[in-house]
Length: 183
Image (cartoon, rainbow, N blue to C red; front, side):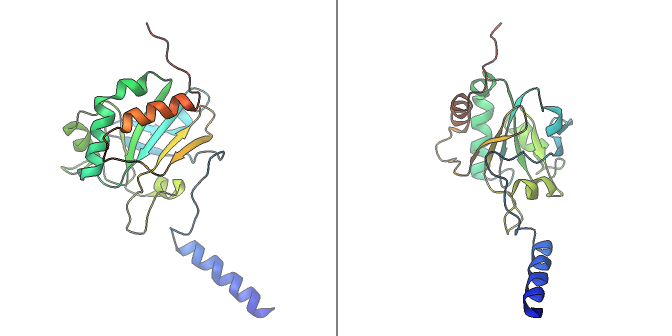
């Protein structure tokens, strides 16, 4: 019995110390709340959208790298496809917001007309299960309904085709996110 309780205590200790041991939320789970600064200087929280609007969060590893640049450009150039739906969308990384390699500079360089969220403490990345062993976020996109429930997690984002915006818009349609009324 002593060995069993010692093993259990060791397992709990390892889980508490290892930030990668926690599992990612799954489809059907409530999305973890976050409060993060955007590249536009505003602060965004999931709770601000609950009951009002769906959100999509495209986590990416690092600003100014090739795949992340392709993804950002696709979403910036074809954001009108996503904006056809009643959704607020973000890209997010563990990069700082400020500085010449920060998310604000990344957004400005690629003319992102949507906020890129910065999570330098990595708390939100851990909560979403995207933080990998190298300390960067995995390239996963979370689709969250207006009630704060995760509807889909894309863990296979392909940046080689430069069609991130098209895929996001198609997925929003598949998930039944309502379209915005056209003026």
